[in-house]
Length: 442
Ligand code: HEM
Image (cartoon, rainbow, N blue to C red; front, side, top):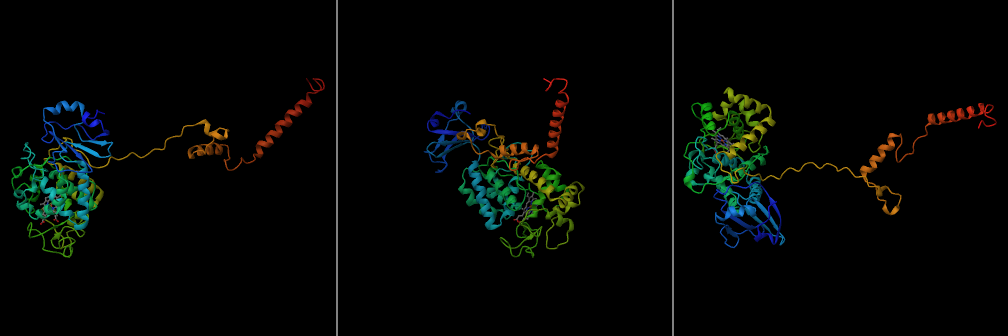
């Protein structure tokens, strides 16, 4: 492990690395923030922020930890040194706050739509960031929010903004995707293998042009879906799996122009009543979207032309049929496709991103006990209670002989008879030989 910087090492111990170094070219890496975890300070507070000139950084590289490094100080306060786009600790706390918001307001569906609409503008044919669109947080700007496809998403933004404001070191790009993935998980959906560290756009000029998101009722739905999703670099399987997100939520005529004003499933909420849902339990993530479209039996459930085509087009149908049959297959594919969607067009810092999930601990294996002779010594002072594993070893040995430590060996009559016969045979042969060897034959 690298040595801590001299300015810090005098009082600090226990340095923990999180991941490899990000490049210095990153706009975020020229600022090394030192922050007291227990006493967070605003980003611009000069007493706790250390700005390092970019020429100084390379020299520093060899001697100090220029990566996400947690330094535990012997003063018992934690300093967090980070040059990631987002702060992992703040992301974790923001996730908890999002869960609480969801439990209170049942806003899962609109949070998922928010994340999807930020990412779904991506154009793989454009290399330059952020012109290429995608998960960069640009949807927070009015110019993009006012795109027709985003009608209603200002509500989602106003719901989550108070949480975002609590966590200034989380980028909007990460925050939208965190909210969406958390909403899926909280609705009972699969765990999404998320990466974080998305850099955010810094002004409305980073917003994509209007028209990159799909229409619900185009003249040729299958062709339209492929045009839009292939432009994002996604596949037929991704199109079908991701459409399964409509297992949650409703469509409102006053927003998108699609759906009934209300149905028996939406008239009482939860959340703001009204709209038309795709499924009966529209706050539960499951495969009912595929089952309901397949049967098309309930007039109160919505089927958009782009939903119906999933069972008409042969390339889509294989997946739609499979997901209607097999929820586990849907969950698996959905989680993969959602993770892909959440990274479209994103620029990560560090470049490989990072996870906020706790690493899985390997199951603990019992450690075989070493034999210590003193334990079994007759010297009372060194005798100790036997461990369970040693007791079971001893028990096994007793059992091999047909007994057990609690029960003495049973009398073996056959063995006793054999011993008596043997003894008689020896005595008989001694007596028979008496004449040839004198009185006792010796
Ligand atoms: C396949 C092309 C898609 C089309 C044409 C489409 C269209 C729509 C429309 C018209 C609405 C109703 C919006 C409103 O009136 O408030 C909607 C809602 C929704 N969409 Fe999509 N969508 C598509 C793909 C997706 C994807 C990929 C996701 C997520 C991965 C998604 C998630 C949602 C959710 C959760 C809602 C419900 C929002 C709420 O209840 O407020 N959609 N979609």
